[in-house]
Length: 591
Image 1 (spheres, one colour):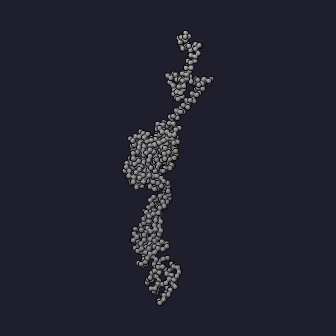
Image 2 (cartoon, one colour):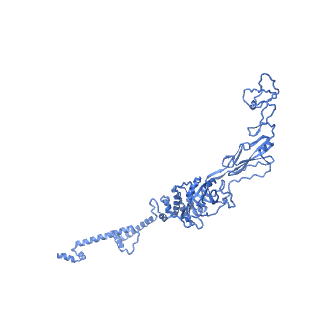
Image 3 (cartoon, helix red, strand yellow):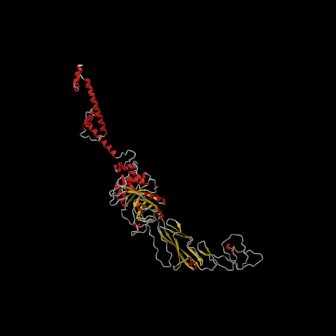
C-alpha cells in the first residue's frame, strides 16, 4: 500500500523516465505514435487531392506534416533530398496537364453540352470537337436572345457592270433596193449558256407576301431568313415571320432554302448560330441548302475577322448543319473570298456550296445600263475561278406579290449549248393560177435554238415585185411573182428570216383546177379529152395496169355500129373513167 501511494505521488513524466516503469513508458509511446500517424494520414489525403495549392505560412502544422512525410518516404535513400526534388518536378507537370484538360470542358466525354464550356475552348479545339461529333445542338432556350438587335440592314459593297457578251454577234442585213426583199438569214454560231431557275431571298422586312403571285411571276425558289445576330452588340434574334413564310411559299409551289444573318467572330458563336438555325427549322420541310450569310461592313463587329480564324468560323457552322441532316452553304462576296479567306478559301468554297453575292447594275432600274429586271438566258454571269451554284445578281429587284425591293438570284442547274434557230419551209417555190389562193403557213415550222419545233412567234409578209405589201387575196387575183418573207423570233437568240417565192399565172380558162406536182409547185392539171368523134357510149377499158401516159387523139373517128367496138387506144386515165366526154379540148401544162 505504501509503494502504491508513493507511485501516485510521482508525476507521469517522472514515472515515464523511471526505468522501473516500462509498462507506462510503452503505453505512452504507442499512444503518441498512433496520434501522429492519424494526423499524417489526413495531411497526405489533403495534399494528394490538390497538389497545386500553395500552403500559406500560417498552416504550420500541415507544413510540418508534409516535411515529416517526405522524410519518411525517402528515409531509406542516401540521396533523399535530390530524389524528392525530382519527384516534385514530375508531379508538377502532371498536375498542370490535368488542370488544362479540366478547363477544356472534358472533351474525352461523349458531348460538350455546357455553353460555358464551349466558350472556354480555343477555336481550334472546339472546331475539332464539332467535327468529331462531340458538340450537341444547343437548345433555343439556352441561347441568349435580344429582339432589339433585329434591325433592317443594307448590303455593303459596289454594284458591278456586267461584262460584255462573248458570243458571236448577229450580223445586220445589208441595205438594199425596194425590189430586193429576200433578206439573208443571219448566221449565229452556237453559244454555251447556263440552265437556271429564278429565285429571291427575303426576311420579315418584306412584310406579308402573296406567294402565289410570286410563283406566277416566274420565281422558282426562295431563301428565307430564320434569324440573325446583331452587328453591334452581337446578340442573337429570331425572324418572327420565318415559319409563316416557309409554309406559305411551299404551299404556293416555291422551293425553300434558309439563311442566318451571321455576325459570328468565334467558333463558339458559329455553333450558337447553327444551333438556333437548326432549332428554327425543326418540323419544317426545307428543300435547298441552309446558308451562313456572313456579312461585314463599316461599324460591323465582324470587320477584324480574316484568314484561318474566319475559315474556322464558317467551317464550324457548316459542319454542325451537315451533321444534323441539312445541306450547308455559305454566302460570300468577292472581298470575303479573295481578301478575307485568301489562301484558306479552298477550305470553304471547295467543301461547301457557295451563294455568290455579285450584283450587276443592268438589273437595277435606276442604273443607266438597266435592261431587264430579271436575268435572261444568254446573259453573262460573273467571271470567276471558283464554282458557285447560286448567284445574287440584284439588290433592287421588283417581284409581283412583294411590296418592297427584294434581292434577286438564280440557281445554276448546268450548262447547255444554244444553236442557231431555223425556219423550215417545205415548199420554197409555189405556182398557182389567178383566182387560186394558198395558205402561206402550210408546211412551215420553226426550230428554236434549243431544238424545239414550233409555230409560235412565226409570221409572214407578202410583197410584190415593186416591194409593196399585199395580202393573199390581192396576190391571187394579179399575175406576177411574189416574195413571202417568214420571220421567227427566238426566245433567246433573236430574230431570223427566210423566204419562199410565189408565182401567179394567168389561167387558161376559168374552169381550170389546181393540182400539186411531186416537186411541190402548185399548178393546174386539166383532165385528158377524148377524140372529137366519140359517142355518148363510154369507151371500154382493156384489162391491164393503169399508166400515166396521156391518151393520143386518133386522126379519124370510127363509124358508129350497133355493137360497140373496143378501140385500140391506150388506157385512159382514172379521171376519164368517171367523167363524161366533153366537147372542148384542153392541153396540159405538166412538164
